[in-house]
Length: 287
Image: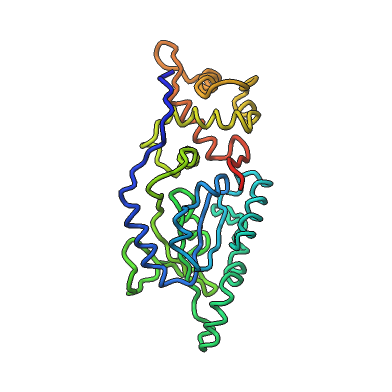
C-alpha cells in the first residue's frame, strides 16, 4: 500500500469569489432562496457564508438524496432546521420524491411576499427563487425535475449574467439557477473529507486511495456492518483504512501484475458504491 499520508483535502477555488459576487448581485431579483444540501452531510454541504449573504430573505432548505441517507437522521435534521426558522424538505430530485410538497412550502415561506403583491394589485405576480448549492448536491436535477419541460427564460435584467439562468417551472414559480460554489477555506478538515466523500470536490484534485481509506475508517467507527455486509468481510474492528481497502481488493479480485492489490481500482469502487447508496442509507453527521 502506498504511504498513507494524513493531509487536508485540497481543491481549486478560483471561480468562487466571482460566484459569491453573482449571488449577492442577484439577490435583489428574487423573493427567496432555495438551498440544496446533501442529506448525508447537511451541515458540511451547506455554505456557511450564505447566512451572511442571504440575510433576511426567506430560505427553503432541500435535503436532497434522502434516499441514500439514514431516515431517522434526516428527521432529526428537518426538526433542527425548523427550529432555526427555516423551511425544510427531504427530497430525492432524481425520482421526484418529496417535491410534491415544494409548491406548498414556497407559498408558506413567501406568505408575506404574496400578501404584499396582492395589496399592490399584483395577485398573480410570479414568485422568484434563487437556487443555490455546492457542486454535486443536485441543483440541476432539482430544476429539471421541477420543470420537467422547464425552459430557460430569456430576460434582459440587470445583474443577470450568462452564468445565471432563469427557468419558468409553472404554478407561478420561476427559478434562478446559479453556478455551484464552494467556499474558499474549510476551518474543519473533516468538512473537506465529507465533501470529497460525496463527490462535491472533484476526484481529480484528491488522492483517491487516501480518500477511500478515510471513508472506510469513518464508516468502520460508525457503521462497520455496512462495510462487512457489502464486501463480505468477517470484521473490520480495529483496522486502519488501508487494511480494509486491501481486504476489499482481495475479496473483489482486484489484482495487477505480480499479484499486487490494485488499490486505486478498489478505492474508486468504494467511493462509487458509497455515493450510490450501495453500502446502505448512511448519514455522516448530526446537528
